[in-house]
Structures are given as structure tokens and as C-alpha cells.
Amino acid sequence: MRIINFNSIIIKFLIIIFSIFSIFIIFNLFNLKLAKESLENMEKTRIESIIENEIYILKKNFNNKNEIEKILNKTFFRLNNLKGIYLKNNILKKEYKLFRDDKNPFGQNKDHLIYKTFKIYDDDGIEIGEIKIAYENYYSVEFYNKYKKMIFVLFIIFFPILVILSVYLYKRIEAIYVLANDLKNIDPNNPKILKTKEKYFELALIVNSINSFLNKLKDSSEISKRLYKKLIEKQNHLEDAQRLAHIGSWEYIPEKNRFFVSKEFFRLIGFKRKEKISWQIFLEKIPGDDRIIFEDNITIALKNGSKFDLVHKIVNKYGKIKYLKTEAKVKKHKSNPTKILGISYGYN
Image (cartoon, rainbow, N blue to C red; front, top):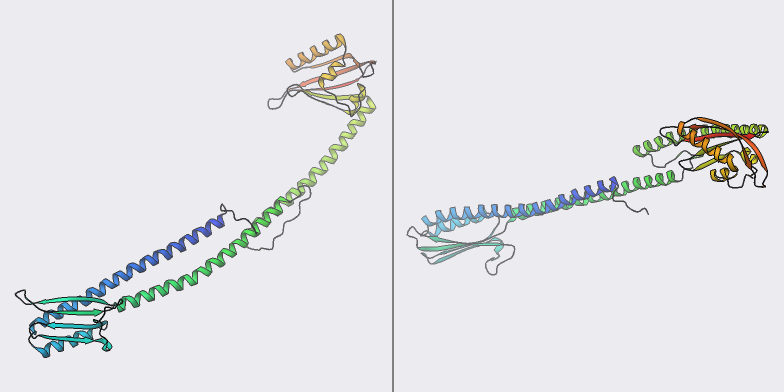
């Protein structure tokens, strides 16, 4: 299983989606609570407003038993969520009780019911009775349950969609990892066309672009191979020509103290190909005054950027002295180190 990289744009996209979904759920849960409280307050205000209006009518008929019963019955059946209503009439010394489904809600308070007591006063402010009601917020509870069910359904619908989307995107990530691994294993000398099982547009576009680049790289590699082959052929021809003419070539880069020589130059100074040779070793093989003259010519040529040629002795590793003629020139360039290019050959 691939290690998830949280810098991946797909992972960041999923995190954003899950964050939005979580905020949506939290917001709706909070909104659900506010909606429930708001509906409960609205229902409470509606019922209490109706009861207070009926109390105003009752006060005018508080000595009329029949009117009281008529008003109470009308109120009770008007408010479907009333579970019980109790009226105490201090003037008639009488109590009136109405219960829904013949169940007395006043015997013991029920948790799901709301209880409210209203005192009744005459015009002089004297208490003449009271009304107690027990009711439930039926409409708010019904709405709350429906709203809660809707949120649950949305969660049931969207959560699997998010899971499926996550799996789908993970597979796309897997395909990209496979592609990256294939790219790591490409042989630049023999690049092979990439293939992928996934055919979605973005990956196919990337693979096609890479394959186009690989085809160009392959063509370039073929050209480089042909050029290298030609270079080797020319180098072999040059070495053959130097061997036949007994001419050795060399190159010295003073700034880097690097000294390059041809195969024939090794033979001219009596060295084998495997032996190490440096500029200092070469100078040490030039004896006495010849070395001083050789170094002076080098110094003047470097200073003036000029050419020089001279005949000088050289002592091979067996102590035998032979004469070489060396022709050299200084090559200066602004962006590259100064070079001394020379040829040497036997001089009799």
C-alpha cells in the first residue's frame, strides 16, 4: 500500500471536501437545535396568547357556569396539543377539568409536557381563580424529528459518496505512483514507451507527453551514438596518422594544472600508456638549459597569447637523450580557462 503524501493536491482536495461536509453536518445540527428552540417558543407564545384571550372572555362570564364550560370546551378542542386544562373558580367555589384521552396530566408531571399556570384577577386586582394547562409542543417535535431524519438521510447518502470518491481518487494516485516508478526505471540509452492501465484524461495526457519526449530522447540518443562512433573513428584516424608521422600532441591548462597527451606522445618520451604523466613530470624530462628556455617560451606565450617553437632535449626513463621539436600556441577565451596546445616530434 502506498504511503499517503499530504502535499498531494488530491489529498488536499479530499481534506477540503471532508471539511466542508463536516461543517455542513455541524451547522445543521446547530441549526436544528436553534430551529427546535424557536418553534417551541412560537408554539408556547401561540398557546399562551390564546389562553390569555380566553381568560379575558371568562372574566366576563365567571358567574355563569354554563358559559364557563362552553368556553373551556371550545378552547380545549381548538388546541389539539392541549393534554389537560384545569380551572379553579373562587367565586362559584367550583373546579373544572378537561383531559385528553381521559388521562390526567396533573397528577404527576410528565417530562414531555409543558405546564403553565395563569392567575385570574377581577378589575379590582383581586384573585378570583386560576387556569392550569398541560400541553406538548407537538408541531415543533414533529418538525424536529423530520428535520433530524432529513439530516440523517443526507449523511447516509453523502458519506458513501465521499468514501467512493476517496477510493476513486486513491486509485488515481496509485496510477501516478506507478507512472513515477516507471519513470525512475527508464534507461536513457534505451528508453521504452510508457504504458498505463488507467485511461482517464489527465494521466493519459501526461503519459502521451512523456512518450513524446522519450521518442525525441531516443532519436537524440541515436544521433549521439552515431556522432560518438564518428568521433571514435576520427580519433583512431588521428592516432594512426600521429603514429605514422611520429607526432605527439598535448594540451596543458595552467589554471587547473591538467595535462592531456596523445598515445604517440607517450612513445616519443619513452613512457608506456599505463604510466602516469603530468606537466611537472614532462618538464623534469627536459634537462638543463633546455628546460629554462622551454619554460621561458611558455611564460612569454601565456603573457602575449602567442605561438612558439623550439628544439629541445628530452631524457626518457632509461636515461637516453633525444631531440624533440615542439610547436605550441596559447588559446585564450573569456569564459573558458587558458589552454596551451602543442605538438612534438622527433628532430634529427
